[in-house]
Length: 425
Ligand SMILES: *Cc1c(COP(=O)(O)O)cnc(C)c1O
Image 1 (cartoon, rainbow, N blue to C red):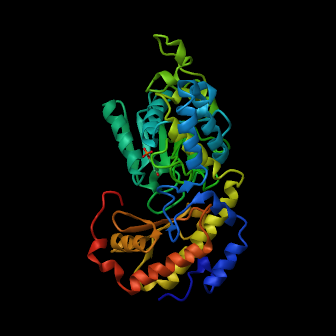
Image 2 (cartoon, rainbow, N blue to C red):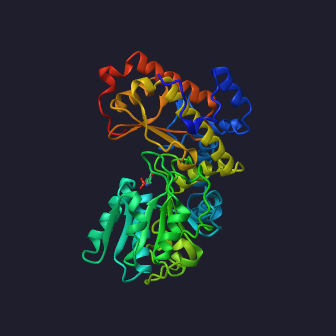
Image 3 (cartoon, helix red, strand yellow):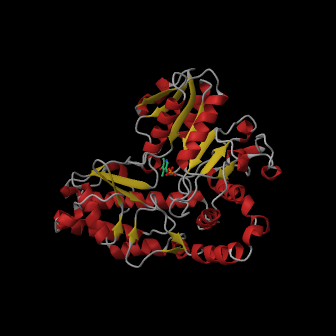
């Protein structure tokens, strides 16, 4: 067992016992936020980076929208209850969390579909430049969608996927768009968003960021960083519910030139004129394609509201403390069983998640879930834990590591039931 902390953690005061962890919670001004969520008793939820929990306000609000607005209002609710404006209204609420101005964010479709739209739009904004540049460890859908764009335009578009350390060297005047994720979904590594955006601009390329793992938990200032385009997920730290629609950001300066390749009626300047010819809506609304999913948008609005009035900077300070503590406790309590930190050790270089390598990561995660500690497994050998600061405390971290220690000490993970691969890991 490791009883010496690595030097980078020297300044972290690790509580000596569970009571000391509890007093950190008692002193935490964000602790009351937990009341905003319905978390099952006995569960320590370390997977809000995969699916955020249910906000307490969501079930009554959905019931009202279903029973009153849909049930009684019927089609009149598109106007009477502002359904038609929800993609932009929820977009404006998200804009506050990511350093965007009102009118720069719209909620629509999935991240994958928005990536498709924005990659094609970026290529059209940079005619004569064939290259999409990305990091070869990017999130799978980001790579797959870019591959699909290349197949759609054979001979015209090329995907340059390089190791992260070679991105700047791979930026040249052939590059139309640099497409990256802000946080590595495996390790939690935080990329240098302002620096890479400026590097893209120096060669005249656009910067498209996927902020799925940072929106709502890592402070972002897309406008100040002069990001061109961004997409992000509604069901992770924004707590919008399973399959919540995603959001897309287009910097104001690019909006009037941007063309949506899915030129559907909801992105038309006047959908209900029912013109035969497509004319794009002004502003970011042109990224809409089809009819918005109102129930899902309402749930996402509640998810975003669950973070209202807090400030991402305060959330960030707490998530850094939670992840620092988790790393220190894991290395103190279970290092003897061969866990290797996969995340950057320094908190400023990672998002709100911590991952460890272990050769038996999958059954260990399953055994932990059976003991109420919900994290996830990522191939080939990662245990991944998310520390959403709005509903987790220091005692949760303490208890999670205690249960991990128990799983290892008792070799509980060896049970056959924990080795069977599920469809969703
Ligand atoms: C979660 C996530 C997505 C999800 O994409 P969907 O199309 O909405 O399923 C995309 N990109 C990244 C980086 C993610 O973390």
